[in-house]
Length: 158
Ligand SMILES: CC(C)(COP(=O)(O)OP(=O)(O)OC[C@H]1O[C@@H](n2cnc3c(N)ncnc32)[C@H](O)[C@@H]1OP(=O)(O)O)[C@@H](O)C(=O)NCCC(=O)NCCS
Image (cartoon, rainbow, N blue to C red; front, side, top):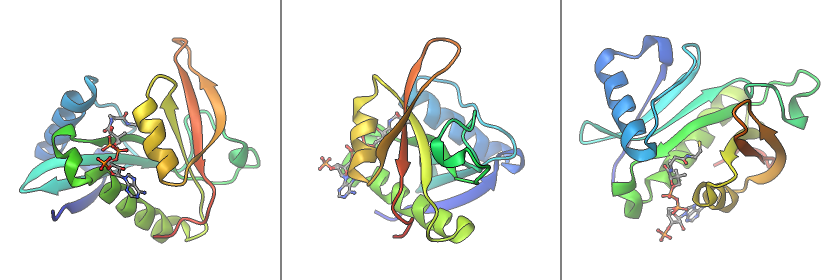
């Protein structure tokens, strides 16, 4: 299945693309799409419809990963979302491959990658572990939601 990827700074997303991203986020997570305007949103389209997405920033929200403590820039992923209806087509794996390629191009092939997953979200944790990520920290936000921080330590290559 051919997926076409579009990379946009969130602030510069055309309204119809933003609308698709909001819908994808809503139907796949039940939550409202939230992202910082300066971050990059990568969206996978199939037949004109957004089926996968991920937002990439230059640091984690609170720089809470050990590999950031000396001011290093380590790309951080959030809103990594795939339309459940296309699960059997492995769009999550396709998106991961694309994102790794994007980060290798933007940050260099040896860059690690960080992300957080809610402790209850076992499916996502297993997906990232399958793709080379390892648990690297724990993170609790104000509302007492607990997250596991995962890092892809191996050089980011595809
Ligand atoms: C997290 C999420 C993207 C994972 O996608 P998923 O499709 O559920 O992931 P899966 O682990 O089932 O992987 C899909 C298939 O690709 C396969 N796969 C995944 N990584 C693979 C790899 N590196 N090599 C080979 N196959 C792989 C899986 O085995 C699976 O195949 P199967 O259906 O035959 O078992 C998706 O569940 C989602 O959008 N969740 C809601 C948002 C969310 O929680 N995001 C994470 C926090 S940002």
